[in-house]
Image 1: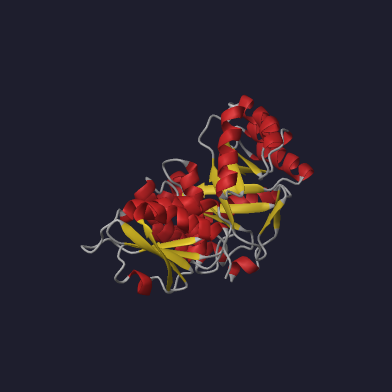
Image 2 (image 1 turned 90 degrees about the vertical axis):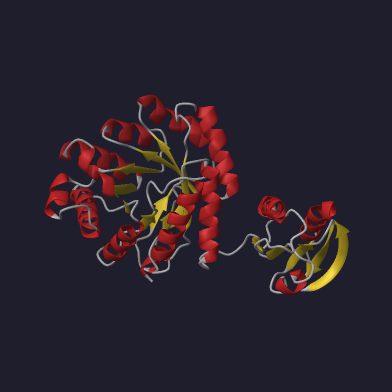
Length: 351
């Protein structure tokens, strides 16, 4: 697999590349200058399972805020920079563990070299970011539109600019909102470089469309052995990005741990609020550190049989339900006690 052979890069106290676990990244949507709000959001993201966090740095005040933010969090902090090389330098001097830049819009070779010199001095990796929407006009005109090949060419050109400035602690990010183009571009670039790749579908969309596009795109890429960090980009609460990323990795067998909730679709036999119950179970198990499968079934007729592959589950009937462990019914309970009984079993879990 490609990810087994990518270059090992240190980001704060985390390591990516070289077959190390794929890390989950998100981005704050607070004003970075507002330290209190930004720290509060990062702590929520940490608790949800975020392992690298990126913050926008549009002003000097935002760059300076990194010093205070760093004191309060325990995951690597990445500065997202556009256009102004001084913001990149300031962010690094105030504790950024990594910076994200597009070397093509940072202001020329001398300014890029100034950024690279500080990164080199402090051992801070640089993420080279290229999106299909910001591809150079010459490449788009030559290729009669945006192509996977053009995205890869642009990204590698930016990588060479940093290498020419004497640095090789690089992470590459190539993104497109076109899922198939994005997947193809990652396959192409994985053949051409050993730098670790940050993977995501940019501008994926709202909670529904963004999750579907990201799940499809990330699965196409990750299943080929490509990708060292991931972000699920959603228009909404970044907590949802982390939850989705964890589920994608677990579904692909790339991450162990955590409770997997499976539930049946509703049908005419359903006599309880199965939709509400399944959502309650999913939220309830989020903080329980077990590696189990929990089934939520809407019918006591087929429920026990359907739940056999799960470690534990509940099956609802009319006003009551069954608690099932390893396919065997262990208790019959009123509907309003099912959730608490399930949680009690999980908190006191034994095989």
